Length: 273
Image: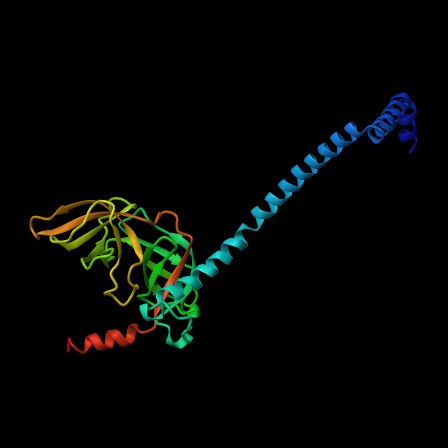
């Protein structure tokens, strides 16, 4: 306490000067409209700057929650989209859950390989969430892969960047179908093979899922045509497709459950017996 008193006594002239300066500034501002308005303006600017920085910080820390909310909303929209039929476009009737052909299961990628010949992804959801083998996996940009194996809480995905991957696809707005494969040369491109030479196509055309399999609904984006040439041995096109997805950066995904898949497979098997 004595040290504080000694400091005050030692700097008494400076403190008195600052006190008188503060009083003079106060009376100047109070009795002069120009100085008063400038002071208020400066104070508002400073407080506005501080509040803006605080708001930006709050937005940053809330991004995780906002992203999850968007993820939840997108899953609901995709469920509606995949189950939308032309005959329902002009009606507001909502189908009961048990009548919907496609259900959407949300999951997050916990591991992703993309630089080997046979690439896989791992999800933080499994049988407990309703994920089973041979379900399609997509994200907001397009096809990611197909469920390969599942456990209670996890699932592994056969990536579209896998030498064993074969997806039914077509040129958008046409009936020319083929198969998507990967030659293990570039993580940004896949190959679209077995496309008839009669197909009308050009660079930039969109490639989508064909809907001829029981795994993916029709017209889910895959990529755009980059190059095309005719294989002289087969007389079919081999097309280089640039993926819409950056397969090196996959976060949240949607697993598609085709509830009518078993019925369709059993029906088709009856013709092969």
